[in-house]
Length: 404
Ligand SMILES: [Fe+2]
Ligand SMILES: [Fe+2]
Ligand SMILES: [Fe+2]
Ligand SMILES: [Fe+2]
Image 1: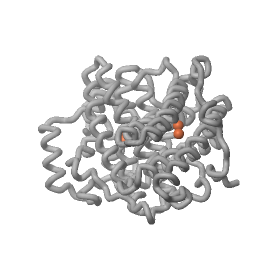
Image 2: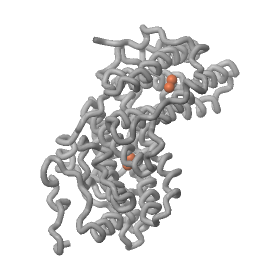
Image 3: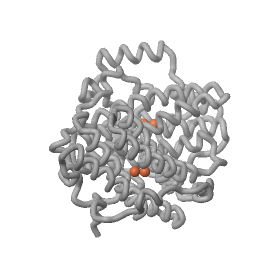
Image 4: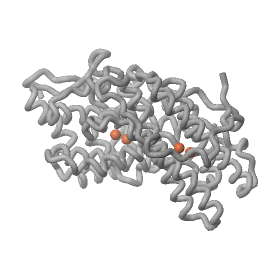
């Protein structure tokens, strides 16, 4: 069945404001909810934050009072949607537990996007990035067992493996090497534009989250690990945002944003296992259909173009949270040694990379290494959740005690 959001009518904007009791959503159960329901909540929070921050940036460059007012009206609804979505997260979870879910989102959403992406250059960008967030999941999970004495498998539920990825210490590149070439807005497939927006948005909320929760920990190793991985997320935002064609007009970008919101709510409505949460995705889709209609009107008026020229004729296949274990193991096997040089990828450490590594590490082991060393000291071994056999990369397999 196909769905073209341009052909469906949503809820009129003046009926979208929610009152306090409608905003007071009941959170999902911290221990018994589907981990992928939490992932969908986190992903949609990232999308809503992008929607409203984009709208603020647009408003700041927009001279028309009428357009500014319309942006403010829609943006207020995006804010309410963000509140309704993010407040579904259980208050009893610690910031570190939410962090582990954030990295699970980064792993399984980016892997899914990489699998579906038709453009080889863009696909490579996702494959490169996913091995890094995969390693973050491993580092944070070691921290989690050390400071909260719990195992991350109760959060990710064996849907996602927790084993070393490209080691975090190698993620620190010269910032200039994080800038990729953009797609071409005239020739890129509509799905490629949606993928880029989605991953940019979710990485950005991860970056923001670590910036804010990192200093709330007392344990020095936790504070340090959040600093280190927070800096890598800055690199990831640079990496993914540079994929988007900067030549898109503001009107075109607005239409793409609203269309992407429709696409994701529709996707999650199709795949949600929790009926109560599914009803929220459905309600928000009905709101987004109206946002999209209003954005399309602005585009026709100010850009002199039809939105159909830039949008897909129907929604692509639904974005799905599902295990990507074999795919990630294949990437571990073939791409673990990659780093970036200019807008491309190389296997050898180059001079600019080496210089950055020396500058940031200052000859010491970074927090991402020390957290695993400390875990080994305390528990005799590192924390892993391996469901598909030994690590595909020999040097990253568990060493028998005494041989390290
Ligand atoms: Fe929204
Ligand atoms: Fe990450
Ligand atoms: Fe990331
Ligand atoms: Fe929207």
